[in-house]
Length: 322
Image 1: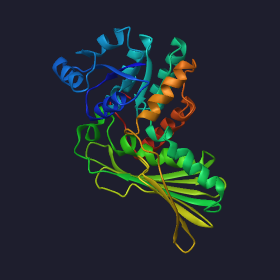
Image 2 (image 1 turned 30 degrees about the horizontal axis):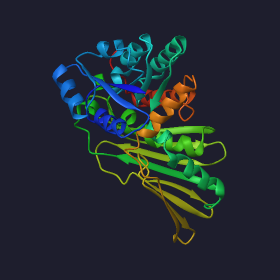
Image 3 (image 1 turned 45 degrees about the vertical axis):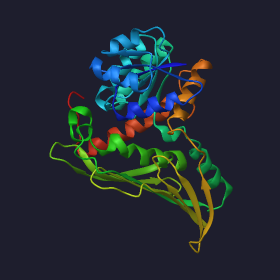
Image 4 (image 1 turned 135 degrees about the vertical axis):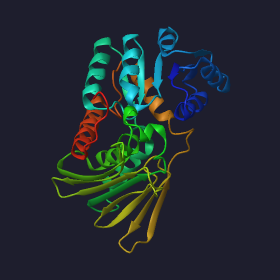
C-alpha cells in the first residue's frame, strides 16, 4: 500500500523509517510547507514523491493512505483535507483538539466511505493483549489498583508551550496513561478527580488524574513535561503485581509475588519501531472495507477526547478558536 506522510518532523521520520522496513507498505510520498525540506526528507528515505503543499499530496492518485504528523491543532484541518480527497487516514494522537472536531471528522469519513483511525500506538501493540492475558490468568490475583506515569523534559518545545498548537502535557503525553488505564481497567467509571499545574500561557505542564471505578478499583495517572519519569505502569492485585516498563512502548512485563520477589519476566516481540502495528491494522482494515480499526474504534477515540475535554474544562485550559 502506497502511503503518504503530511509533515516532515521527527515523528514523521520515525514513520518513514518504519515504512521503509515493512513488506506490505511503501513509503511513497511526503509533503511539507517547504519544498526543499520535503525533498530532503524524500531523498533520505528514498521516496518517490516530495510535495511543497499538502494539497498536492492528497491530489496524488497513487497515495492510498495518509499519515498525519502535524501538530494537534492542525489535525482537524488536515484530516478534513485528506478525507475530502478520498484518502484513508492514520492521524497522529491527539486525534484532534476536542471531541467536537473529532465527531465532525469521523462523520465526514463515514460519509466519504474512507477509513480514519487514531495513531495511539500502544492500542495496536501486542503488549496490550499480553498484559490483558496475564491479568486474566490470575497470576496477580484480583486486580485492585493501577498506576501509570509518563514524563519528559519538553516544556520548552513549541508544540508543548503554545496554546495555539493545542499544547500542554495532557494531549501530548497524558493521553498515554489514560489509555493505559482504559485498556486494562475498562470504562465502568464512578468518578474522575484531577489537578494540574498550568504555565503562564495557560497550558498544563503536569497533571495528576485519579479514576475510581464502580467495582472499587482505582487508577492513579500522572504526566509531566517538566521532569523525566520512569514511565512505568504498575497493576496490583491480591496475589502480587506486575510492572510494565515504559507504558509508551512496552519493553518488558515483570511479575512479582506478595513477597515482592520476581517470579516471571516477559519480553515483548522484536519490532521495527512500534509504529508498524498501527500501519498493519490500517492496511488490514482497508483491505476488509472497514472504516475503523478494531484496536482503536471511533467510539474509544471519542471517549478519550471527551474525557480530556472535561479535564481541561476543570483546569481552565482553553485553546484559541475552540
